[in-house]
Amino acid sequence: MAPGTTLQRSVLPSGLRVVTQQLPGSRSAAVGMWVAVGSRDEPTAVAGAAHYLEHLLFKGTTRRSAVAIAEEIDAVGGELNAFTTRDCTCYHAQVLDCDLELAIDLVCDVLGDALIDPADVEIERGVVLEEIAMRDDDPEDLLHDEFCAALFGSHPLGRPVLGTEESVSGMSREALHAFYRRCYTPPRLVLTAAGNVTHSAVLAAVARSFGHHLTGCAQPVRPRRGRAQVTARRALALCPDSSEQAHVMLGVPTMDRHDDRRYALGVLNAALGGGMSSRLFQQVREQRGLAYAVYSALDCYADTGSLSIYAGCSPGRLGEVAVVVGDVLAALARDGLSDTELARGKGQLRGALVLGLEDAPSWMTRIGTAELNHGEHHTVEHELGRIDGVTVEQVGELARELLHQPITAAVVGPYSHVDDLPDEIAELIA
Image (cartoon, rainbow, N blue to C red; front, side):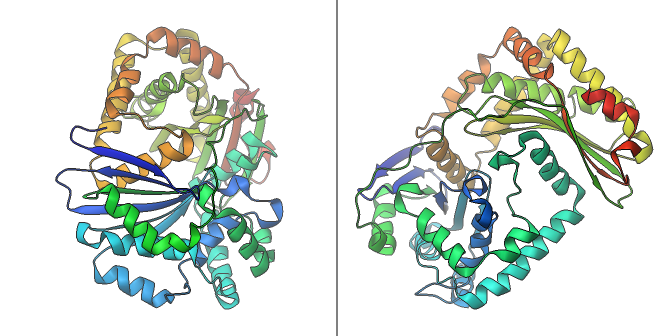
């Protein structure tokens, strides 16, 4: 961990894990209750349930109304929120250090004792449907979901986190409540706290606020592992849209987050499209002015992953963008990186790692995801060492392996049919 910081971890008899990170000099505290349940864990009949619950759990508990929850966090100038991913859900709060106990109590209360009132289910159903409509109106968000569906196919990772209009409209209060009670149990939970906190104080606050849920004995769920049956495939998904721009995302499956080659993959991504000096940014935007936004990104899951490229351009330039992107990928697969690119890529990852840990919420997130994803915690120095150990040969070998795969693509734009797309898109994925 960072110099002077102290990480402590406890596993309670109920299976709940408590992990804290004390940060010298901090005057705040960040608390998160992590649930090892995401959209990938939902049965098809309740697709979107984890995100739907994210709305409902703040609507009132056995001890607090929705108004009381809002008033208590506002009264101390804190923040209380949640997010859902394909892998997990997190309910989190940030407060001054003197209000740590309140933050823990609020997070434990909303997660453990939500009422899920039938009237609130109907109110929030409309809100979630509006959120889905907003996603459909945001070309980048819609594009990402379409790309995941094309890349992962019938695998649960291919489903949107929000669910669909059909699944949300048909979800009953009973089905939501059953999912909540079945999945939000101590063995699947991790409470993390970072900032000006002590492990003993956090444990005591958890016992007071959540003790009535900690009566049983169980082992924590283990981090996900395995290999998903996801293989690269030539696929093209089109979502017609009346926007004035064409938005394209293309990519290939990669290794999972447990693979030691993930550090080389990070350097490869940085050099490909991770910054202003990257090949994509320089070739597509700086030298040709074909797009304002162009980048590459990684999504790493327990059993698979993806390397994707995004570009937004005028419809008339989509074909040229596809040619340039294809040329960049071919050159990278053929020649790998230069020593200079390797050094820049490593520097970008080092800076992102260290600068991304400048506050308590960042540390709270780091230790939460480490516990859920790996069940172990490494120091920042360890991670920096792994980045520094990446070689040109490792990145080149990985580029040849990944970028020679068939390419999956998705397009959102003013096209009625796949045949309306430029020929260069079809040639890129051929």
